[in-house]
Amino acid sequence: AEKNVEGTLEEIMTKVYAGFGEDELPMLGDMPVDLTDPDAVSYYLGTSELSIKEALVREPMMGSIPHSVVLVRLNDAKDAEAAVAKIKENANPRKWICVEAKNVFVESIGDLVILIMADSEGQTTAEVAPRLKANFGGLK
Image 1 (cartoon, rainbow, N blue to C red):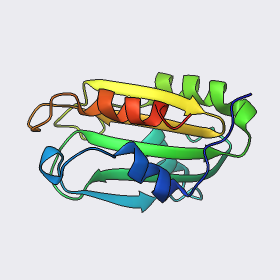
Image 2: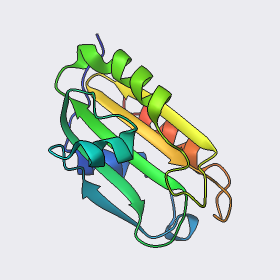
Image 3: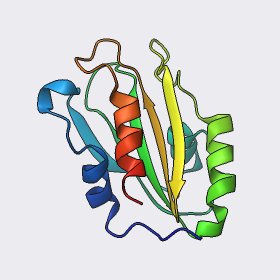
Image 4: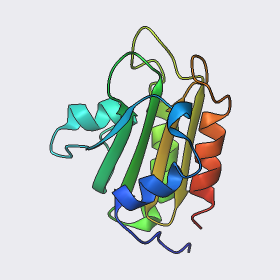
C-alpha cells in the first residue's frame, strides 16, 4: 500500500502548484468543498458517491476559465482506485458551459485523490495540467 501524503490539503495544494509564476495562471482561489451538499460535491467531482473525509478546490476567482483542481482526502486509502475510476467516468470538463477543459487527469497517492481539469488555451503556459500532474506525482 502507498503511504499517505502528509500535510493539510492547503499545504499539499501549494506543492501541486510549485514552480508556477503568478503570470502563468489565472487568479486562483481555494475553497473547501461542502461535503454536506451532494450537489456541490457532484459539481466539483462529477459524483457524490465517494467516502470523503475532506476536499479542497482551487479555481479561478472570476471569468469562465477552464481550470479546476480538486484535492480529496478519502476516509480510507483502499477506496482510492474505485474513487479514481468513478471520478474519471463522471467528471465534467464542460461544467463551465461556455468553455471546456481539454486536459483531465485523475490520480491518487494513498488516501489522496486529485482531479485536474485545465486547458492551456488563453493561458501563458502551455502545459499547465501535465505540470500539475507531475507535481502531484512527485509527492510520493
